[in-house]
Structures are given as structure tokens and as C-alpha cells.
Image (cartoon, rainbow, N blue to C red):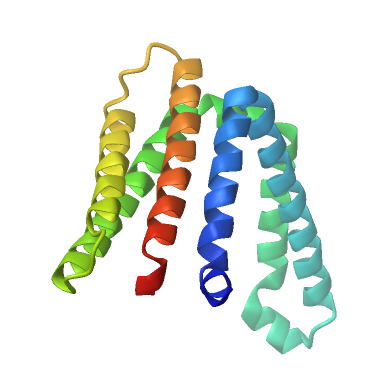
Length: 179
């Protein structure tokens, strides 16, 4: 039980990663549009809160914080997200490159994890090494962009998210006595 408490955040992230992968496989455009609209609404709310905070704060302090400008910028960004969620979908190839870079970085950290386990002479160091290899291979595939269509790219991203999440949970549970 203590293991689950200590690693709850990792397990939750893996579950969310797998869920996002499944949703990307089911309907990538609707899922992405929904996320973008939700982010837009959150930006609108944050902008309104910032502006209200500006007017309810002492004038000198409010001037130093710049809350009015921040609030207006947040509102504009929120309106853009709500009104034009398809812009982000059209910019998906760029977003995919960023995703590939993040997956590559995660793979490199998994290499560190595997090396740490190997240096500490613990068993099962090869599990994070396999996970690192999968991450790095997926990142290289994403970054080289061999996809004929955006739909294939969405499917690959969804599948890679699911595989990453499953491997991370397996590695975590196989090494639970080590942490």
C-alpha cells in the first residue's frame, strides 16, 4: 500500500497517458478539439480572475504585477482556442514534432533510470532499458515523420502513448521493492 501511495502520481500519469492514447485512436479530431476548447475556457476564466484581481488590488501593487495585461492576454488566447480549435489541428505536425522531442527526452531519462539500476546492481535494470529503447524508437519515428497522412500519425501517437504507459507501469511494479 505504501508503494502505491509513493507512486500514485506516476500511476495516474500512466493511466491518463493510456486514456489519451485510446481517445486519440477513437476520434482524434474530436478529442483534440475538446481539449483545446477546454483549455480555452480555462484561459478565459484565468483571464477574468486576473482582471478582477487587478481591480481589487492596490493600484501600485497592481501596476507592478501587470495583472490587467496578463488577464487580457489570457482572455484573447482563450477566445482564440474556443473560436478556432481547428487551427491547432492544422498545426498538428508541429505539435507532433514537439511531442517527439518530449518522448525522446523521456527516453533519455529512462536510460538514466536503467543505468542507475545497473550501477546499483539491482535486478530488472533491463526493463527500464527496454522502455527507454521503445521511447527513443517511437521518438525517432515521430521526428522522421514517415506518415502518409495525418490520420496514420494520430494512430501512431495514440498507440505509442498506450505502449509507453503500459511499459512504465510494468517497470514500476516490477521494481516496486527497489523504491
